[in-house]
Length: 242
Image (cartoon, rainbow, N blue to C red; front, side):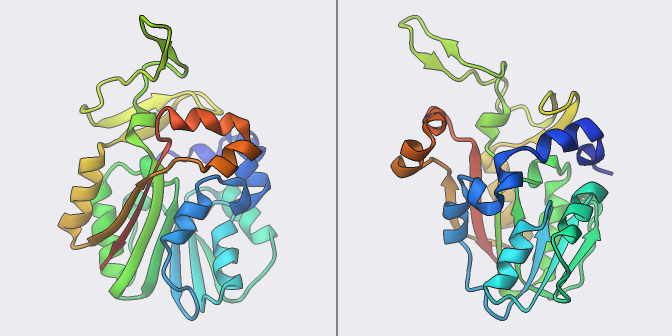
């Protein structure tokens, strides 16, 4: 079973104050790039893996999705999602992505935002998602970029010429890593880009688009601290088809 860090009070209280928690999709700088990877939403059946507060579920319904299933391990996150208001076409259910079971050929789109780095057996999850999609169905997801997950320290280093560098620790050594983010002892699973893409291919997916997120110039003007994201990618965004 995956670590249920989001139900820990200190973590949850910190998470709910983040910009993306308060502002929803508009508070996530990678959302425009991720949205551009989505297929047409109108009339589709969608599963959201790690739905959190349900922001994407509600956005999908507002853009014509026929039905949306939001899955999350955290009861606190699901309670927050349900509190946003009832919609008979949105179902929120508790599920562990490490032990996920989905009906075959059920969904047109599988979507996931910043949840897959908590999954230990990504091959099993990708196989489950592939079976759950209709032929031609899309899988669109974001995850923490493995370069971002692999720093030795949470801050910059400085090279001999005084330039800031981002330290990388054993990038090619995959497996669980423990970090302190919003709470102590948060477990994330480090995988190289190659592993992620090859596991998708082995599951039967055709990869359509891969993006290492960078903020736009307009985003940096509006939020200057995003300039730091030009030093190393923070998110990996992928679109694949069944």
